[in-house]
Length: 86
Image (cartoon, rainbow, N blue to C red):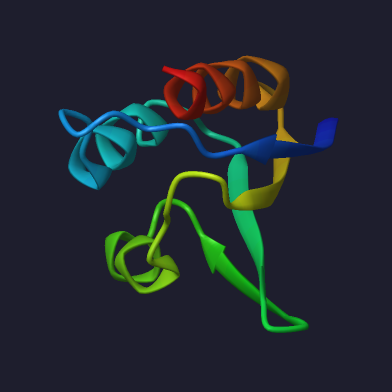
């Protein structure tokens, strides 16, 4: 089973939505966790949870720790990284 654990910096344009991100990750079998440092405490959500994604309140410049675990973890991470880099 593959495991990817890397940091990503958020760079979104105003056209991108969390709905698009949610649709992207639903194609993968891997478990995908986003971790964000909020004032010294790590906030962790399952990226496949739309409500969890909303609660992260992502902003440009945020640094996230992305953890993907599963048979398609590398592909899932690459697409998430591409989404946040657009």
